[in-house]
Image (cartoon, rainbow, N blue to C red; front, side, top):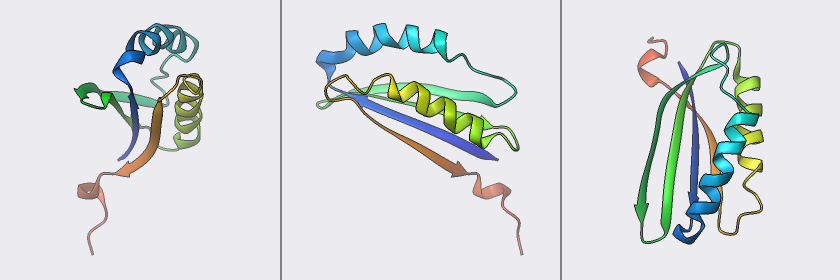
Length: 99
């Protein structure tokens, strides 16, 4: 199984701006169950601000569409000072072929 990890972090004084934009972004980029399935969307706080992570299972053969949606989402936040992100692909090592 292939997973897409979308990690985001931003300063706490930008939380309201990020949250308000989030509603708009998700309406414009709704999930497509034929491409991926959200496994978890979690968040925490630290002295540096807010952190969140969305982990999705990518359906077989759908990685290009999943990556395209992820980048469309994060590009909306580029103008928010201090907003950072990473988009990562992870493999379930328990499902890798054994020799």
